[in-house]
Amino acid sequence: MHKVNGYFLRSIKDLMRWDVLRLALGLGLPLMAVWVVIGWLLWGPMVAVTTQIITWVPFSLVKANGALFITFFVWFVAVLISFAALTALVGPPMLRKFKERTYYIYTFSAILFFSALWALVILLNWPRIDSEIQYFLTLLPFQTVSDALAWLLAFYLFYNAYILTLFLIISYFKEPFLEGIRELDYPEVELDGNGISKSHHYAHFRDAFLFIIFSVIAFPVLFIPIANIFVQLLLWGWLYREAYFLSVCDLYCTEEEYRHLREHNFTIWSIALLASLLNFLPVINIFTPFFAIIMFFHWIMTHKSINQASREEQS
Image (cartoon, rainbow, N blue to C red; front, side, top):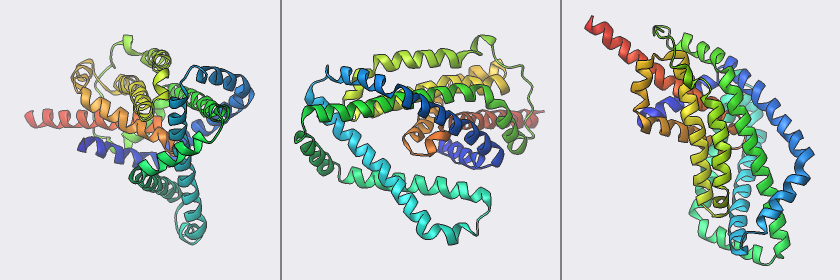
């Protein structure tokens, strides 16, 4: 796990490079705008569907899940307000001294800090916060709680659609920014392979389709507090795990290297789940698929670098 954390930190550094950051923002922000428009156009029908689904759920689960969603929303708002307050109070004199690239490092670091801080505050006070919110929800008529949860559930579905489409787009635009990172970080590594079997080339389409199927199957779990977070994290991790590993291997691995790396299932899952955690963070979630594929890239290129050095020593 220590090595995986190292790949994570290196991925943060790579993402702060302007060529990678420009691509991330150039893909993530317009795609988000597209889904905002789609959500605005289809919001009524989607809420009608989610409202109908909620009528099948016992009120006790609706109340408990509503409390969890409200807590998550409070955390989300607290992170954004804290970041905005810090930027407004100390940002202008401090950021004036920074280079343009450092603005993004400041934004990323500050949001990570406030996300962890407010998550810790909520966890330490969870029993009290949860009981107070659930008590508040009992004072509301069922229709009010149901409508609120239907809106949040509709937002969740559109958000997952955004994550899925960004995942597919990056599967196609990966080579330019990965090659840029390779030329800077691994210029000595020889690329002596012809890629892996062509049967793996369309893994991202297969996994995207299966992700939809698994999400439908796991949909009832979304109404079980806490379990819904772990299931969603597992689904996102599964989505990144195979497809992005194969995508990077297709560019830089021989078939023999692919088979050897494929045996390290724990590392593959660790990278995918660690990257998937970023999907829960505001603003930073735009970059999550980039983190995932860059982390796999560093793991694979480090493996190739070690093997190459070993062969050179033996010869």
